[in-house]
Image (cartoon, rainbow, N blue to C red; front, side, top):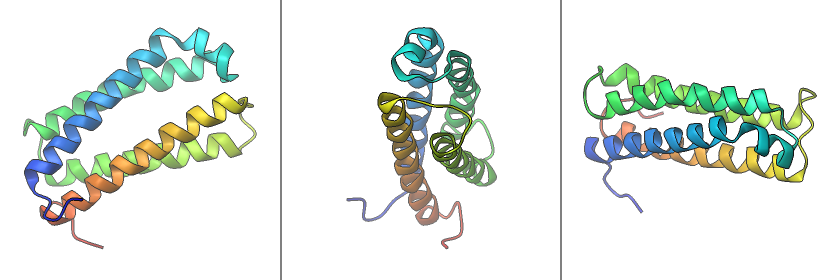
Length: 134
């Protein structure tokens, strides 16, 4: 368990988040059609969800390496991750798509993963003085 998060921990979490976005984006864009058949999620949705992750990953990496201003950028990343999680849950529960069990599991698993890393980023940012603790 993390006892004293630091800016170094936050930077590592942001780099991990960027890496996960890149890998997920690559898998979704390269395999949208076969994944659509397996999960009953429309291929264009998978493709564009993956494509959106590439610029997000670049932004996260730029923030983590100090190429972009720190304070507001970290808050924007945390907000974006929270919105991604919320949108994923809404997508599963709403009428827009009809994923099968594997599709629900995929959406749910990635939403939990994003929520988990977001919680870690938020905790680290509060302790690093990037965001005010709530």
